[in-house]
Length: 283
Image (cartoon, rainbow, N blue to C red):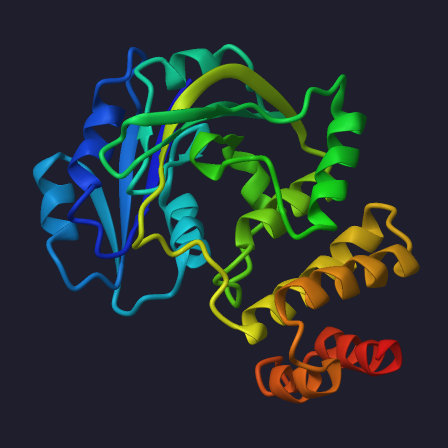
C-alpha cells in the first residue's frame, strides 16, 4: 500500500519542520511527501526541500482547497492523506490507517487538540455510529449547523475518489465539508479510527475562521445542492440557513446580504442565480 502525504502550506515556516518530521517518523513509511507551497513569501519551500519533500508551487495564494487539489493531482500513491502544515501525526498514523482502508473505503481518526507548542489540551472523539448510513446522517446533521466532525488532517482517501470528487476552488472556508459531502454522494464509505492519531494545533494565525459574509453565503450556496441530494428537505435547509445566519450576522438584513453576495457569485452560473432567486423568496 502506497501512501501519498499531501501538506498544504502557506507561510508555514514556523511549524512545517515539526509537521514533516512527524511524517518521516511513521512506523509505516510514506510512499511520497508532497508539500504544496500556496504562494508563500517565507522559507516554506526551502524547509520542505531540506526535509526531502517534493514541492508543488502556486505563484499566488489560492486557498487550502486548491492546495489540497493540486497535491492530490500530483500524488501517485494508492491513497492520499492531507496533513495541515501546523499539525502533526502520531508515529502510528499510517500503520493504523492501513489496516482499514481499501479502494472503496476512507478513514479518519480521533485527534488531540493542542496548544501552539503542541501540548495536549484535550482529545476529540467524534460521535459514535454503527455503519455508513448512520455516519452519513450524522455528517448531514452537523452540516446543517455548518460544522463537521471529520478533521482533514486525519483522513486517508483512496486515490481513485478524485476521479469523481474535487475540492471547490472558489471556497476558502468550508471546502473540506463540501468535499466530505461529495464523497458521500459518490458512495464512498468512511471508517473511524478510535485511537487519536493526529495532533491538531490551535494558534492565533490559523486560517480556518470565517472571514466575511461573502464566504459564508458562498459556502451555503454549495451546501444547498449537496444537502438536498443527501435527503434534506428544502424547508429543513432554509430553517438551518436562517438559524445560522441570525447567529453570525444579527445586525445585517438578508436583503443587504443578498446585494453583497451577488457580486461574488459567478454571473453565468445557473446554480448561483437560482440560489439568489430562492434567497430572495426566502427573505
